[in-house]
Length: 233
Ligand code: CTP
Ligand code: MG
Image 1 (cartoon, helix red, strand yellow):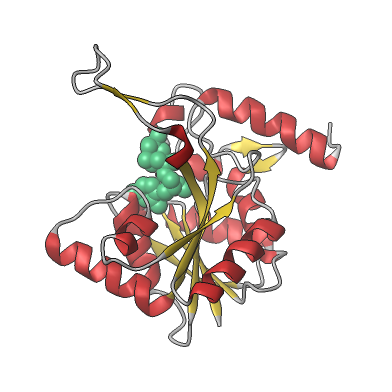
Image 2: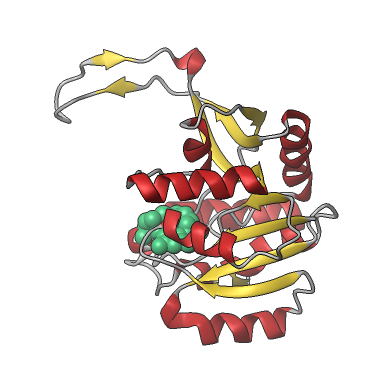
């Protein structure tokens, strides 16, 4: 069984100047952003069940949305935590016990396609451990220790920008989160928790249109991409 855990408990602070939080409820193409994300997962045949991680103060709103959305794969809505890592951990604890593969996908990436989710899932199963969507870095990347002077230019050929979906054997991801929790280790994605255990994480070429809605300009780009994709006005 494959379960998708969808962290959606963030407040969207970097968007809050233009939109009310939480970010998952921001209107995009005529419906809350979260509805696009959920629809993509609902339409992905290899996804059997979905655990939605919602902001603790907005659980009732998310439950209403689930009712009107008719998400038939939704297994549970659970309250998230202080940061993304905690929210995913709480999502893992709410999965159906028979889950063998976990697809972590941020609610904040509403333009994900069923094809990309499936490719990453297939790659993870080939390795037996984990795979993530990622994009080869197109920009030249500098490291600066003080934010004023460049100390180093990194080798772009070795750099990849991680996206979600990220797919893991359920036991591997559970163990990685438990270890991080016990050691007080904090990561910005789930793959990093698995990498530090020395386990392989396979790269799958992601999709440039699989934007993460972070800043106000991302909403404008997402609207334009959806228009091009679906032809809505
Ligand atoms: N997330 C979460 N729980 C948190 C923080 C983030 O479930 N405590 C989720 C967000 O809802 C989002 C994903 O993790 O789907 C990626 O996080 P990000 O893009 O940083 O969203 P926010 O934290 O909401 O945005 P910001 O950092 O601007 O506040
Ligand atoms: Mg955040």
